[in-house]
Image 1 (cartoon, helix red, strand yellow):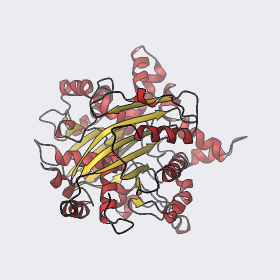
Image 2: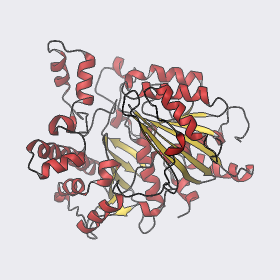
Image 3: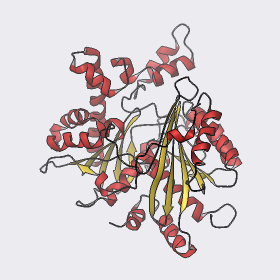
Length: 450
């Protein structure tokens, strides 16, 4: 299937991408080079993408770790997987300013193309922004207002954005939100049963991991050998975890809500919780809102039950008979099974897709989750599932590249009534595409980009 057809089928982007492809063909542009910044609480992933018409592929990617701490870490490689980090000299990421300066050095290496635009993954847009946004003073002001919606994610993103905008003054800057994919959810899937005075402040279910889900939909559209599944359930399982139900490639329901804390159990986050527990915790001596927030966001989940939030380490401990690790894995898998089964009951399913660090790399977790759905007849091809783990292993080097149908792998038995797939999360690819779309369809100065 051609990439142009893929883009036309993307959820709500069909008409816009059609305009982009047509405009690009008329403009005479060869390509845009888009820098994608994906900030975390103590790390920044960055990559440069070449976008031409409906094609998009990565030229290089990097990751800075230990920001604000002492354990500086840099990974930087080109599309062939060649390590380029040695060309950057000393690594200092003790502050965001130092991290941004290191990105500037990486982007400015000899032989790398000039940047035409910068895109950012931003977790939460707040109550007043819809769709991905060109960053203007007005949009930045709304993002500052939105910090209470995502206090663990948005402050770092804003600090990065403001630093990069000072550095790259002459190119467009675009914020891409994890919530936009879920804007197609019906009202009954988003509303909380709270008084209107609370709901009018933007308290509703937003959903997250939208860029990951959108990339899964795109890859499933592009893949050869099967019809695109009309009813799809996407399990994004990583440090953060969510389950999303899609119909015809559009989100209709998801497990995360107002913030990325709710839903299924996660690495350090509690997932769904009786609100009475929060009230109980707040009534304890010396409790504060901040201390309770740190507990349910940073000291809960796999870490609280198993002692660590790394599934690989939990598997090792569980294999040695560690009861805490075994319990953590059972609770984690059960929470995902409940979410998937609930969505199947509500919407039906033609396919279940695993993505994210755990979803892509941990064959045992997939076995246990699908085993929990045995009452629905779902079956894995155990040999394919194990081969998939080897193919997707983070220890297996693979080049940076554009999405291909080889990234979609079926791991279900042929007689399973619901097909099961593993698909890599390609958030940065989606950000690059959205940036190109916004730059080409609505340039701020009325002119086409360079």
